[in-house]
Length: 114
Length: 113
Picture 1 (cartoon, rainbow over the protein chains, first blue to last red):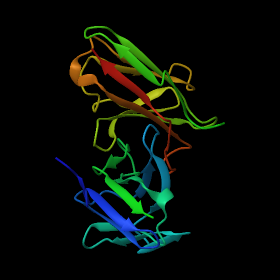
Picture 2: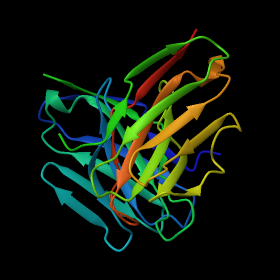
Picture 3: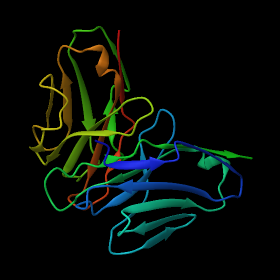
Picture 4: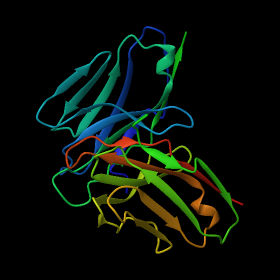
C-alpha cells in the first residue's frame, strides 16, 4: 500500500522556469512533510519541510504548498537551474509517536535544460 | 565533515553470505534510522533507535535482518544468508530527536552475485 503518491515520475524544465512536483497522502495521522533532493551515488539531502499548521513555506527558491483538506502538498522550484537536476522525493511521517520513520514517494527525476 | 558516515560504501558478496554495515550518526543525535532504497524507488523505512533502544523493528524485511546500537552511538545492520533480492542501497539517517529532521548518509550499496 503506497501511502504517499508522487507525480510526475519525470519532469523536464527549461532553465529559469518553475518546476512543480506534487504529492498526495492517505494517512491523516501524518504531521510532518519534508522534501529531499538526491544526486546519483549520494544519500537524500533535506531541502525543506512543512507541518500542517501552515499552508505555505518558502526557503530561497524552494516553496512548499500544503492543502490539508485535500491531503496534498507540492514543491515549487523557482528560477530552476541546471544544478537543480536531481531526483526529488516527498515524504511524510507521524512524529507523535510509534514508528516515526519517513514514508517516501517514488521520486521525480528532474532535468533542467540549459 | 560531521555528517552521517556509512561504511563500506560498496559491498559485493555471494548469495548466502552474511553482511554487516556500519553507520556513525551525527554527534549528539540520539535517534538513528535505517532505510533500504531499491533502484527507482524512494527509501523504505526499516527500523530506528532512540539511544541504544530499538523502538521499532516490525518493518525489518525478514528475520534475516537485524540491527544493533550497543552504546547508543554507532549502529550496525546485519543481513544473514543474503539473497538476490537484498541487492539495494542501505541508508542510515540520524536526528536530534522526535520532530527533528532526519539527515542521511550516502549509503552502502549491496550487490549480491
